[in-house]
View 1 (tube, helix red, strand yellow):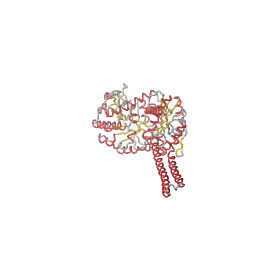
View 2 (cartoon, helix red, strand yellow):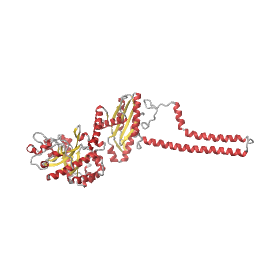
View 3 (cartoon, rainbow, N blue to C red):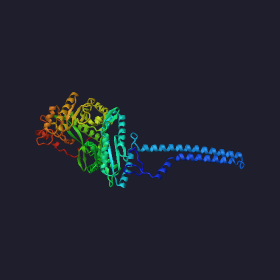
View 4 (cartoon, helix red, strand yellow):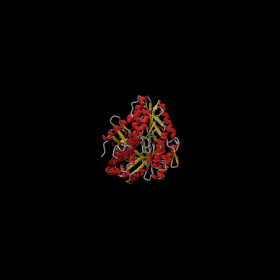
Length: 572
């Protein structure tokens, strides 16, 4: 079938192989030589019997008994030799078939029958060499299914496997005869378009693939529409990239297509620089963990109605030796992809709990202040994570009721199996919050399952534009639902007094944002003044500088104005 396997014979532009008559005859003889050898042995036995019969006419030349014995021996030898040859050929053919099966399994994905990752890189390397020799264009398409996790989790793994097989068949039926199709892993596929005359031909293949995905897939009697995002890397004859470079670049373009929801995107020079920078971040991040370059900053949450500090959210920063202070958006994605997120999450958890415990010791008013720490996807999937939380609480001496672990809505929906981990954490006495609520896929249907959740944090995107009727309706619905479920609501990204006024009208009292304070280092927070209740409104000072209190009492928080301090002191 197209795209499953390729021989090493030269191909025409349309993918049809060329083979000379001489090579064809040799191939047929070599493929059937196991059938020829038993015939030769049989012929030898027949010849021996013929010689014996001929000698009967001249029995007077030799003794009749010797002649009979010689003839029978020749006949028995011929038959035995033929039998042994047949058995040897049978075992040899069996061994060859077994070896061929092993070679096929080593190169092909057992679920779809497509090339696997290792075979892909080997074939792609050969394709690059051939493209240079024939002065043709090579296209690498990296595909990722958009809704595979939803189908796999909701309908089961068998349905997910059926979907992958259907996708593989559609890809094989869509691409050209000379193209290569491989399963890269999970719900990711790679198509290699070979022997092309122009770059437009690559785009034509991508458009044809997207068109084939428009037809619904039948799974267990129901129709499912499955879309895909395609990243394209195009190699011209003078291109110096190797197979892993092209796949990596196509993968990067796929993420661009997924974010833009454009169907497909082509890797360009801007992305090349981004990939190089991403590799630098990945390399430096390993060093950052070893040399303790990651620091924790704290952004306050304010109970505006109660005129007091409600809590903090712990946010990681990277004190990079050459780039300066780097925000989480510049490196956490890399940490998640490279498996370093769990280590970073543990570092933030330990730092935040230790810092909160220190404040409890320094100020009695700090003992009711919450400390929020974000949970990464890798931590939710780790069954030992609740034991880590219990260990950190015991090590730091922080009461469990002061710790709030925050997790995004999408992570929960994508990994419902992780709810047992959250319940184990709740049983420790730790509170749980859903971060960026309203931006995920769960809507309100899943909230009934989250009996362990105590807080919903409304995403900044809704707070930014509350003049929008849709955003106002969402906030009102969130507040009404939270009241019905006895949940606390926190508004993120508050930056103006007008937003404060409207949120109070909605019934949201706890707020977080630059209007009150930017994230600051732990040693920039003065426990003697930050944790006591205030008589005035808790808005920014008249000079516009971020702070917790108005101008008349802002002097107590002068240390909060320095938001770019160097690395804070390590804790415990």
